[in-house]
Image 1 (tube, helix red, strand yellow):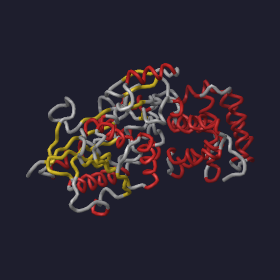
Image 2 (cartoon, rainbow, N blue to C red):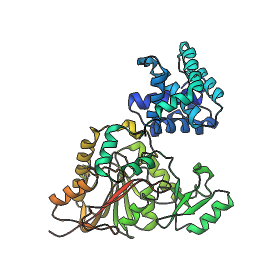
Image 3 (cartoon, one colour):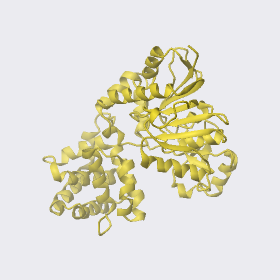
Image 4 (cartoon, one colour):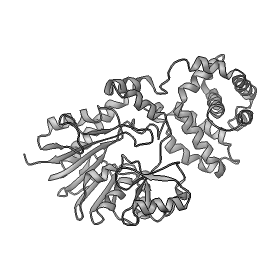
Length: 433
């Protein structure tokens, strides 16, 4: 731990460097840096990190014009400081000269004081020539996505790929799920209005969208389990699963626990097992269960190897498999995914999904339901994955979840501006052979 607190600009530069050059995620890094900056600077740090990842190609195009030669090796942290400065100038209300001064001062904190003049000169040149530079950079429509992903989206969604990209490039709305045992949607909307938090109801039943995202500690009765934060399309998982009281339910890959708590809200007397392979992530599951006043059997285990954590004679009535995936459906919520995920990652994810699906299918009772879910947009992980599984699994039957075409394999939600994220669902029933 450092002796003195970092500035939000220095912290942002370090975090962006770790994302771009070391493959670490914002979800991991931001909590680690929380104790290294002043509490009041945390919102700005989050805005800088998420924002830079969201518009990275535009910022990189600007630096190519401003720098005579690229900054490499240890000096890449200076490059990241420039990204911080450019983002502040273009996308925040911070006065430009103040933004420049703060980034210049941050060169000392990231141990690059000799680059103070370069950072100052580059950013002040941008202030002078901003219109001309942006005219060059913005002369063509930018997707702000890696080329491999754009090509996959074009292939899978020839008529919708631009809408998907536009939605991905927006800031996500904040959705809540009301606990029906503690409040109704209308009563909680009234409570929000009393706290000057404008909101409106949405779909499915129980979903509320805030007009403006806010910290959870500002949400009335959040600590008492009255509401949870959960995207509206993610809320369909527990509803489609259809858990009943006294059934044995498995929530596989359960962290951070939003779907587990929703299952128990709908079937409070179900016997729910929440499984995840990451012990640190299971801490969040336990915290969410405690906040909601619910109980589940929380297990750390590998979903591809049920024999390691489950008795041989134990079978489930229903299984929710929220499979590990590319997370390409939640890019606007986690914009670093665009730069962390690579095209070569997809085949390995498809293989892992199949391994989990096959292993858990063996632990499903005849007549039972397995709901396969991902937060991916890629058909290789979704409809193509399930179509291949159905072909090789004679006791698996696909049942429609909405009014999709008879030829459709599952249901794909696409990300929507002011709506939900990208989610895929396929509901499988285990039949007698």
